[in-house]
Length: 428
Image (tube, rainbow, N blue to C red; front, side, top):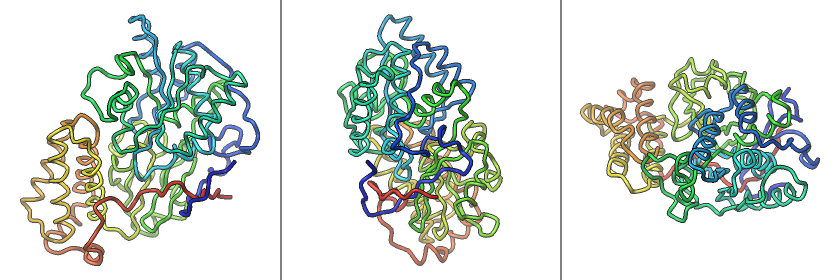
């Protein structure tokens, strides 16, 4: 059964040359996928993930092998059962890759979850998802997987998660599954120390677990690809799967966007991302996921600004982050609207140099001051605007640019969200 059409079109494509049998999104989905061999060996799973350099694909980019071994160690030393969680709450508005994966290939992520639960000896596992269609697909796939005896999903609970930008943050997931509000908590303790109901907990992204299933299935021969959500300010939306060896420039050209012919501003990593440096276009997906550079892949969102001034785009993002913050920390619910106000004034040509000084100070001084990443997201996008488009920002001190002048009024939230549910159109 294919996704229900819901108006807005969302293209889904797989890079030419990716083996359909090893792809997360390609191949014939009507064919029953071959089961991943069952393993209860943490070291085998960690070794496969380590050799493939598998990192979390939810935004943080943390090495999966380290996370798995750490949760196992805490479970063993404490003598308590571990908990495994599939985090499918895609709160990033400009991202749809996880929802597409759960909708089209729910069995892959569930097999990965089952492998982790079995290896850790977890008595309970959770699929934490706010999207109704994705939950339905996961529930159906879980029943089929359990009936076929593939993986360890005996203690699986598919949970209706609260939707929101912060509700997919790891500590918010743990708090919600423990019966509290889906809001982040201060650290420590981390989830691997005291997660769901105080138990050592592994929380992992949908795409990460799907890759883990492929690695086990192919005996480590699978080279993890990368899922990206491409968003443009002209209404175009796509979820694509590409090899981790291709550059960002190659991906854009494949999608009909040639940076050599036109000057586009590109925000990489979603609302937690940054406006990129020109040389970032030449870096591979593997490099961008490694977090060795300031511009990182993050949650896999590539936002291309054809017509929108980056000052306006950052203002919209800041307003959305202000609406979505957890209202728990003074630096967050005071700092984000303050930054948004200055960037708004910039867009309208009302800001002065002293405002830029304050904005730059907030962008660096407030980082790390909040319980969750919302404040850090605001600081990052502001800092990248000042660093990467400083000349444009300076011109806004005297008058708004043509693009900002033509669109003086903007909605309080972002216009870059991916409509969902969507009419999924597969590229050929």
